[in-house]
Image (cartoon, rainbow, N blue to C red; front, side, top):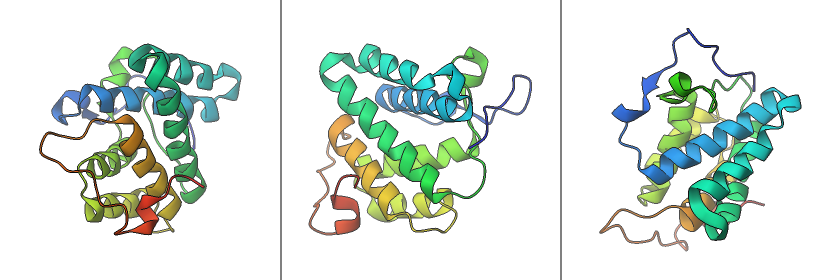
Length: 170
């Protein structure tokens, strides 16, 4: 995982065009802080990730979301071979856009929240570059199940159907 896009370069798709819920935008912000932590360890972005989770989700849900988001990021990092491009959470102009890699990650998460397992697997396969995405999918489902509100009319996914998605991160 390399760094964030420097300001002035193509930042990707505007977040506003993608229909993310407030919760999904908040998870993206938390993930970006973790990405920054790995790209520039001296900046200690993990502290900002935890602080953001507490601020954006409160002190009851924030810790769970912070850890579940980190699990998603870590499993993705272990699976991918190439550089993951992300936009900085600290630059308002950059944060208003989503890179193709961020979009694939968020698409997998959104599909999991909506109970669309096949779509989640497809997005994960692209994001994980054809590598085994089972751990990533477990982490995504854990985040979706514990942290994000399901759309009205969407039943929770039957976790007995697909054990690769049912278990939390290992």
